[in-house]
Structure formats: C-alpha cells, structure tokens
Amino acid sequence: MITTHVLDTARGLPAVGVKIEIYHVKFDGTMELLKSSETNKDGRSPEPLVDRDELQAGVYQITFFIGRYFESTKSNENTSVFLDQVPVRFTVSNPSSHYHVPLLASPYGYTTYRGS
Image 1: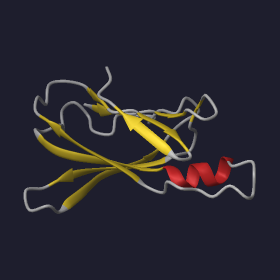
Image 2 (image 1 turned 90 degrees about the vertical axis):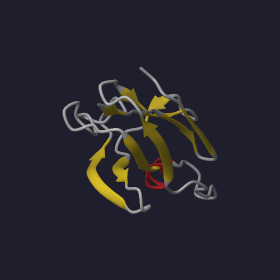
Image 3 (image 1 turned 120 degrees about the horizontal axis):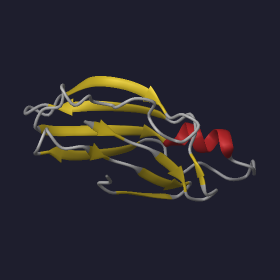
Image 4 (image 1 turned 135 degrees about the horizontal axis):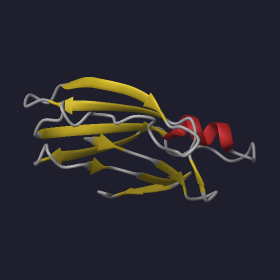
C-alpha cells in the first residue's frame, strides 16, 4: 500500500488540510488520478492512498498542494509563498511492500524519503 504524511518543519507541527493527489504514471507518460485526499489533524492521509490489494508495480506520483497550506498559515502579510505544488514521483517495484512517502516542508524547501 501507499501512505503519506506531511510535516510543517518551520512550525514543528503536522500540516493539517493539505490536499494530496496520487497518480499512476503510465508508460506513455500520461497520468491516471487514483485518489484525492486531505491530511488530517496528524498530518496524515486518513486512509491509504493506494490499498494493498490495488497496488501494482510501476511509477506513481503524489502531488502535494502545499502552497495552499502555507498561504493559510502565514503570519506575515509581506511573506510570499514560494512553493505551490510538490510532485514526488517514485517507483513501486514490490507491490506486496508498504510504501510510505512523507513530505517534510517549510515555506521555501522540502524533503522526502521512503519511510516505514
């Protein structure tokens, strides 16, 4: 299965209300939207983005709409929002494994990794 969570590293808090979309990237480069979700009070998707029985080998992309989140949390009107959408594209080679793909974000940068 594929799961995620988002942390606001600038504030040291879970990022609540971040829109997330997950796509299956096909061989011809087109993308099929599988699910749209939003992070909960813990910064997590409330359910797996792709369930264990639906996961196939291939390329996937999670798009995090982090700009909307930072726009809603900015405390200084003179602060611009730099990041808008953060796409994270990754390969699932073993569909029986759990792929946890978190996003750690601040208004001006982000990182991701394969978690557990």
